[in-house]
Image (cartoon, rainbow, N blue to C red; front, top):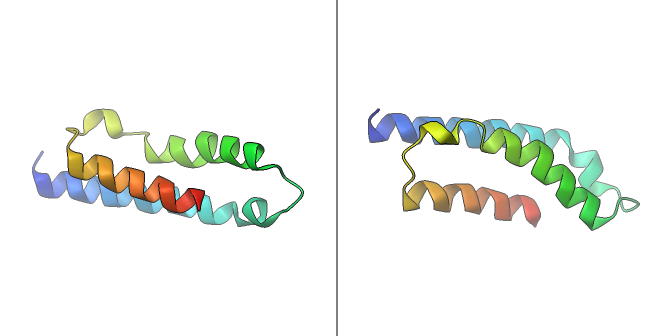
Length: 76
């Protein structure tokens, strides 16, 4: 797998995880749901999609930074 293919895979996976995050906007906007529960929902739903195929990627610092950046944006 070339570097370009990995970049496409990472970008595609981030896009899928972002789609899940967007679908959960009503949860994020609901003030009656505790932050701890929201983080649990983020970890179980969004991060599971984000990290689903990561076992097949060669881990590089750039890929790790991109994934962590996406997670940080979700947490904000």
